[in-house]
Length: 378
Image (cartoon, rainbow, N blue to C red):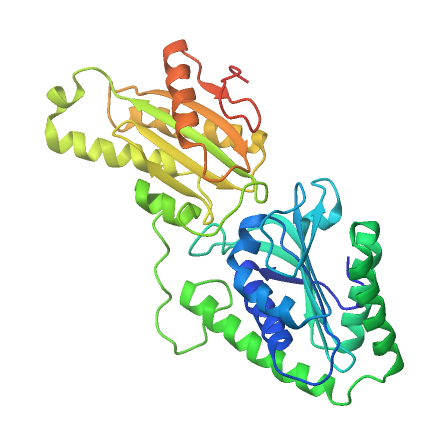
């Protein structure tokens, strides 16, 4: 992956967006150093749609503008851009890359999706990648050559010719002196901006001494509108990237419990149930209370087996409440799936939990990705 010789860095989506926009701004800057080639891999079409206007402006001046997305040949491309379809199984499908090259300038970002997350304001912004970025022409030259070779016959003849002509001009000229100095300044500004962003989010290593108390940890329990915002249902997100495990949980109290124990006791009992259901959550996880009895645990980057383990931990934690509330034994049923669909298939999981409760199944597994048919107890 790392053809520049640089050591890979761990990069969040937030940081990749900042570097991508910097490279795109450089490509749009007025300069007499053409021809310009820009190649960008977007993973999925919604991410390209967000940058459509920028790439239409780039394509209006560049000798070649190539954009790659996973799936069939992308439709409704930015005017003047060449679209390339990437296969789900190839390495390039996991790659977020932006490269700009002229005879006198070059910048490149190359990052591979780790299918992991860190704690962040939204599920999308916390996605983690591994890669590198730089503003050196010869590194960008190597990346254009690599992508040209990988895309090969998927590029139309006219586009390949424009890329070859640009590469020939770049090879004829020495790199511009001072690139290392300019890049050092950019890296300093970037690292300080990253530290400031982490401090604002309360992330690790984000606080300096004397900056005051750390921000409070985000509440793991969301309402449904909060879930939509955090999961990106109302923003730019795409199916097929980050896998997310979903664990639907239904906790039924004994019949007549509120009448036997009174409203105040019932309120304490409800808080105890919430504490038990959310007890296995990591900082990156979230829980949603869908009704008085129903919860949804959202567990990014977990496998199905790991999610089943979490469901078992919930069973154990809720079962342990009988020691705090004598003679009260809650009935717990759960359903588990792992999905890359967006928006998340919440209603399918709720349906599966209802099926598990009717059938007396402690933990049901949904058919992979279809998230429609419970397949029974593990």
